[in-house]
Image (cartoon, rainbow, N blue to C red):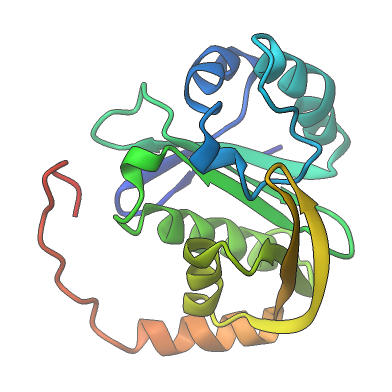
Length: 198
């Protein structure tokens, strides 16, 4: 079972088939898809979100091979603003996307912290690895904030083409040490922005 997770501003709700309609409306944006795997069809077909959930994502959840959540602001829990997923395997253990209008608010960093903690503390995996295009600066910044490190470089195929990429890694021990350091520091105060999100 995939539990609901919460951060200070977000509710991470387990992915369900009823989410397909909203995902179909939000997902087909170049800013979202360009650094995703070329397994994503592009241009995005009109029924692609439903088919992905019904044929790929939800069966993986049922098998216990993946754990997926929609991201929703606690101030507007009916609206999906993104998706984040954990996956078993030697690499590609976490993937995510966020509606571009919510970029720059630290929301995906919050979501990544929540699911990474779930990966190590509840699912008890020893290591997390995530590949990303070197050009995907925002995603790389999240990995840096989480204390991850680059273990190799390689070329990978994305919707936008074949790009130089990095494999980032963090171990359970490294994650717990980072978490312990963070808990010993007082949180910074963050002003509200024009969306009313701090």
